[in-house]
Structure formats: C-alpha cells, structure tokens
Length: 343
Image 1 (cartoon, helix red, strand yellow):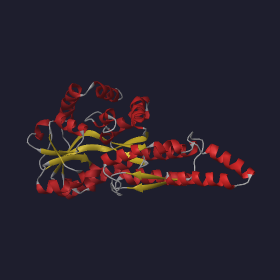
Image 2 (spheres, helix red, strand yellow):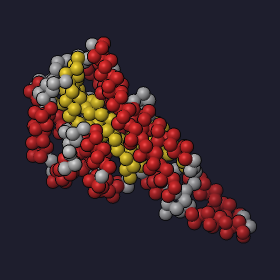
Image 3 (cartoon, helix red, strand yellow):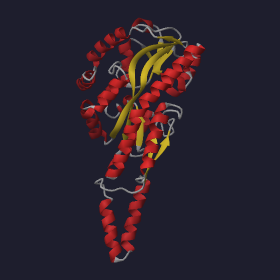
Image 4 (cartoon, one colour):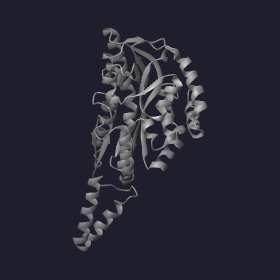
C-alpha cells in the first residue's frame, strides 16, 4: 500500500514540473490510477496468518497465493508473515479493518468479533465435512453472509477453505457426550467456541493456543480439540494418550483483504482472486494428505491411540438441539442456510 501511495506522489510531482505535453501524459496516468479500480501501481501486500511454515495453510495456501501473484507480473508482491508475527487472531482482524494489515487468513470465530453472524461458520456440526464447507462457499448460499460482513467492516472475502475437522484429544477415550463429564477441555476463547463446548457437553477451560502444550503437560487441562494438522504442529501427541475422531467442527479459514482491495486495478484484482482460488482448491488436498500420514505415524508409533468408533450421531443430535435453542434469530438463519446445503 505504501508503494502505491509513493507512486501516486511521484506522478503528481512529475505533473507539476514537466513540459505541457508531459503534463497531459501525467494527467492521463493520474486519471487511470484513481480509486475506481481501473488501474493500479506497484504494491506490496502483507499477508498474515497464525500457522507454522510446515502446515498446509502456509505451504499450500499462503505460499501458493504469493507465488501465483508473482508469476502473473502485474505489479503486486505478496509478503507473508506466518506464525502470528503480526499479532494474534483477534488483533489481526482489527488490523485488517484499520488497514494496517492487507490480507489475513482467519478463522470465522475471530471474524465474529467484528461481525457476529460470520462466527456461525464455526458452529459445531454446522458442516458435515470439508466438502460441505467448500460447497457452501462455492454456491450462492454464502453470498448474503459475506456481503453483510463486507458492508459492516469494509473487509472483502477472497475465498475460504477447511483445514480439516476438529477432533478431541485427552488421556482417556471420548466416544460419546457423557465421556466429557469431569474433563477440563481446552477451547479457544471466543463466543462460538464456548457455545460449542456447552453444546457438546464439555467443561470448557480457556487456554491460549501458544500455551496449550504446557497446560496439558502440567495438567491444567485434561484435553483439548483441534484439527489433526494443528495437533501435530505443536506436538500434542507427546502430552496426550488418545485422539477421538469426533469430527465435530470444520476448521474454517477465510482469506480476507481490507480496503486496499479497492486500490488495486481490475487486472490486479483478477490475478489476486485467481491466486486465492488456486489455493482454495489445493489446501484441502494437502490437509487430507497430511492427516493421513500423521494418523499412520501415530498408529505405528503408538504415540496416540486412535479412537474411531465415536458416536458422532449422538453428539450431532445433542448439538443441533442446543444451537437451535440458543442461537439468536440472525445466527439461526445462517445456521439453517448452512444446514440447507448439506447433502
């Protein structure tokens, strides 16, 4: 964004000191470099996220976006800041709204801090699986939600993917809702995640993701829930005995961009959108490959015992009843739209 502004300033100076013919040319350039999206100058965009460089959200997501944009050579450079270098999720969404960060890869619950209805994307069992989430965003069903988000915040959504289904880990198996009784389960500190905990029947304890390994190691909490790629990324298999495949939530990632979107030329917008579309196609496959390899490694090493006979239907039925009874009217409308796209 700074480079774009410097380019405009340089063009203005040139117009002031050049010969009449040059002045006319500068006038033409300035006319095309306005905020109407018809032309754009050189621009470097910051892309932030909270994942490590080994996770698929970075390898197959952020890196693909940056590489695709660079290859198009339209004057846009995407500079990546992984591992929460530019702040935690709650801080980064505020920075995108204010324009201090250009692009972010965010979970829906964090976005709910600035537009509550979008957090319903992270409701337990709202999506049946990652394909269901992709189908929701590919079709028209997500249009009103994303437009409402943009109208409220000025933040545009370029795409979304699932980084896998969230699973329980603990030092004892979790096969049905009653198995959560008496367990202190770590959930992220957001209204939707805490509502999920209530709906699932869990005793939620709030612990920062960065502190989760230590909390489990010291027994501050008994268990937690995360997608497999996150569990492996912070080595939770070293401090937990069981992973129970509850698949209770599609871990959403939305690729969002602030007001700088309107400062890009139409060509630059098309290239950036195409780059995100490519990443959206690739991330789920990368996640699935990583999950398969990780589960096979845990099974072979015995680091985590895999519980694959979870009574998912019992959890799903309990959760659906709770959410319908506790969502407000606007949240319930989003939830029902999502459920309406299930196969």
